[in-house]
Every structure is written in C-alpha cells, then in structure tokens.
Image (cartoon, rainbow, N blue to C red; front, side, top):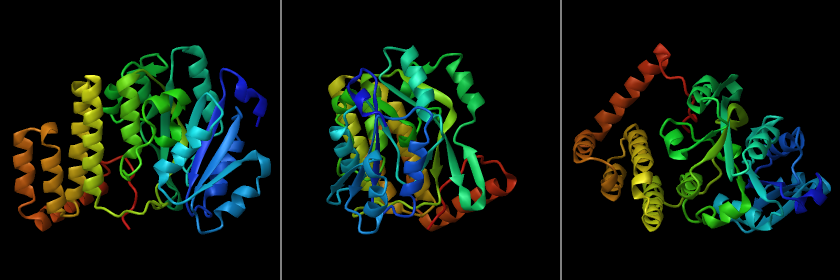
Length: 333
C-alpha cells in the first residue's frame, strides 16, 4: 500500500463495511491485498461487531485502516469510509465477497483512457460455492455486444434496463461524485446501493464497464442487516426518495423506466410468498410507475394470494427442471 500516492491525481481507497464478519472478512481483505494494482489504502469500517471481526482485522497491522462505529447499518458504515478516505477514487467490497486479482487494474485502465470518466463498474460472478456452482451474472459476450467496441455505456439506465448494472463489489467512483450524489441513504435497508447508483447516473450517465467478472458475490452468505420494517416500506421509501430527487433535477422521465422495472420485479418476488397486503401497499405507493392495467392484473392475482404463490412456485420449479433459467439466486432461509 503506497501511502504517498494518496496525494496524486489518481489514487484508490478501498472501503469494506463489516458487521460480525469473522467468518469471511479475511477472504475479502486478502483479495484486495492480492490485487495486481495495489490500492493506496484499505479501510475496514466495523459497524459495531460483537464477534472477533476486530481481532482478525487488526492482525493485518498497518495494511488496514480500522474504523469502529456503533451499529448503524451498511450505508452509515460505507459513508464513514467515504468521508475518511484520502484518495480521489473509492472502490467498495462487501465483507463476505471477494475480488478477482486484476479488478482494480482493469478499471484503472478504463479510467486512464477516458479522462472524463467519473465512475466505472463491471460484471461479476454469482456463486453458490458450497454446491460448486459459479456463473457470470451476465455472459461477457452479451455485454461486449452492447458495448460495441467501447469501454463504457453512454447511458447507465439503458444498461440497467438490460440487467447490466454492476454490483456494489464492482463499483469504483470518484469521491467527490459520491459526495455530490449524497452518498448512501441511511435508514433504507433495501436497495440502498441502487438508490445511490441512480443518483449518480442522473448526474453522470456515462459509466465505464468491464465485461469480465471483477468480483465474486457469495449467495450462500446471509445478509447481516437487521430489518425492523417489512421490505415493502424500504422499497417504497427508496422509490419515493429517488423520484423526488429526479424531479428536482428535471429528470423524472429518465428515471421512471428503471424505477418501474424494479417495482414490478419486487412485486413479482412478493407474489411467491403470497404477500398480498405488502404488494397492495407497494402498488399504491408506486402507482405512477405502472399502468392501470398492470395494477388491475396484480390486484386480481392477490385476491387469492396462497393460490398465486403456489402457482408461481410450480412454474419456477418447472423452469428450473427444464434448465430455462440461467441465473442464480440466494437460497431461501
């Protein structure tokens, strides 16, 4: 770790938020230390862990900057890391995931060849590693086709609607851009990272993108977020906050297609659990994002929520048996 280069025009701080991460934090840190392009600093923000996370992190000595805070959630932890970072660029890694060895180097190459770039992301693996199943989130050839020889997408939202949006583990963003966009929203514990990417994209639509996988997202590791409200409230809050910001920028029409896509995706997931009342509430809160016909169709489905949930699960099972669905999802608990 070259501390002197923090003062140069191009430098990288890595932020790893951690909460009760003793089982996985070493893997994450080691993947950063193994980078072909070394970051200028690595910051672990301990969000009030009660296990041996601190002991493990401190064993790395001055290779890691350790920050301890009272438990306030991943957004607050990442924000603390952003504000304390000394570099011009910030890269994020969740404590239970890991990077491939040339992640930073590949992204730095794009940044250096596109001087107007303020953020860059990339593909990633979705891994059920205990079952030895690991797949690209998106096949690289598909991304290459959409990039059409370029190293960037002109419009993040166009890529987002094609399910090419990157992941928190693959984001590297200028520090001043993160601050301009308001950083991670505290108090929203679902899709809080997506909210921030939307805020950045509304201001800076061009995003660098690497079609190869840059990180491994471990699906078998459960979330450490402590949920005190039902998910629909977090989703509704995230959408409302996003639309409010877009209106202030005069870009509601830019955001709406992506917001509508996510609303419908969340509702579809809830149908599998027969969550009639949350779906109804989410529909009411997001009614400007979907058509009256869609709202009528969903309300018809939730009139018999248990039957709809059974039908959804049966269809999903058939899809899995036939091998139609290619993506991996986090196993149900």
